Amino acid sequence: MIKVNHIWIGGYLIKGVQAMIDRRIFNLPGAKKIVGILGLLVFIQGFMILFQGKFLAESIVGLWKRQPLTSITTTTILFAVVFLLRHILTLLKNRVVAPFVNKTAQSLRAQLMAKLFKIGPAATAAKGTGSLVTMAVDGVDQIQNYLQLVFIKVFDMMVIPWILLVYLFFIRWQESVFLLLIYPIIILFMIILGFAAQAKADQQYAGYQRLSNNFVDTLRGLPTLKQLGLSKQYSKNVFSVSEDYRKQTLSVLTIAVLSTFALDFFTTLSIAVVAVFLGLGLIKGSIALLPALIMLVLSPEYFLPIRNFANDYHATLDGKNAMTAIFEVLDLPEIKDQDQLKKLPAGWQADDELTFEHVDVSYQDVDRDPNQLSDATLHDISFSVKGYQKIGLIGKSGSGKTTLIDTLSGFLTPQVGSGTIKVNQQVLSHLAQDSWKQNFLYIPQSPYLFHDTIENNIRFYTPTATSEQVQTAAGQAGLSDWLASLPTGLQTKIGEGNRGVSGGQAQRIALARAFLDQQRKILLFDEPTAHLDIETEAELKEAMTPIFANHLVFFATHRLHWLNQMDYVLVLDEGKLVQQGTPDELSKQPGAYAQLVSDMGGGQ
Image 1 (cartoon, one colour):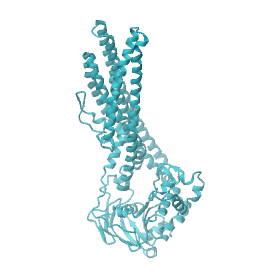
Image 2 (cartoon, one colour):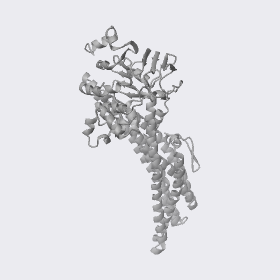
Image 3 (spheres, one colour):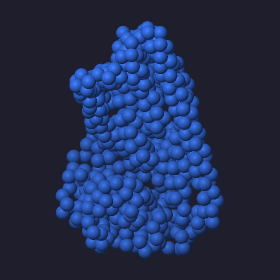
């Protein structure tokens, strides 16, 4: 969480509070303004609590002395007023913090999604798909809860007890000194248990991410696992990971319950000690009933902020860990522009040219397990394309197709000094250029859809498009019949991460994005039909091929019938470009292309 090295609270230097608060939340946009307003409200509320205890004690003492009701009417009314003001201030604190928290949560989610787009799939693979989806959906919600509670509870703990303690010193200094001395002991105990709970919570959050990744990966590969007869084996693996997560969760709850019990025990015992000394003072006549009762009423209020903070601390550990995880992603390095691509004024045109000369691409700079790489690195890649060509990328699984697509999209960068990339004869170190990114659409195997309407999902690249334009693009993508079957058509909301739609429908929505955007003239397809059945693929192909016109297309596939729509083919094998040429030229040559055709049944 946030790191606070030293905090003066009532003259005590408390070290180790870094396990509880993350300094970065105070650097969030708008946080300083919230701190100022919240500090003022808490300061006023502290006095409302003080007066509430004072007027309550005065009313009780008046009744004890059998005074007429009229004589205690004023104090009773005053008690009711400050009691109401106290809770109004609580409501105001929540109203002040809530807009800031909501805006911050939305901003963090937007920053996370933008960061993931910039660093690309190669870097994000190190975090795991399930982990990132959990982080973007559940994690941000947990951060929202965390910020809402921590801002308020921290200020309560830092201000209210010391307003009460100063007042109690003027009533009776002996018991006040005891309250002052017991407070840092309780905080020290909180810190010790807080570190223990933090360690357990870190393990639990890591287990949660591991469970998410494991479940998502198993779900994605379920058809393949069933074909290989390994589905039961992987179901046992999911059960094992979930069982570990269950044990980690119970371990965190054990520490949380223990610390809550211990805190309640210490504070209750401290109040009891104060009550005993006050009782002895009353017996000896060294203190009057009214000040004794005021002190007894305010003692629980003195400990209440720290009890609330401790309870909410354990309840928001997941939010703290989620915030740390998101900040770690936001701090990941981005590809820097060493050579700025000159802007293509009218987008990619028929006379524009892209050239790769002896380019090498490696995952060595990406923090991920080499045994889990889904594609090969690239070695000595050279080719040149011009205008609106349709380029097919073929090869066996792991041959380097996805790596080349990621390089073309700027998600991966070539090794320094390995070769050159040219756009219209301008030499570039990589294609992670804003001018380049503004000219291509990327359609992967599983296009990502957001929790929003179908219409807004289609508007992904063109947010200013009209409803009529979206409707036309949807029709061109073959979505008309499906949309007609939905009660609210384009206004139908779909789930985060493609929940509620089939693979074919998700691909058609991605195609509609391409039909809607008339400015981007470069299309990058990474095996878009890999997980679809033959019938669905045939229908999708009919909708997809019209968009190839007047576009530069790179189409990675392992289904060779797509090559009938290609002008040129790049054949990859173990990360090397082993053949290239038109489909007709390659069909007449021996080599990797002929072998692929043979392996696929002897034809295209």
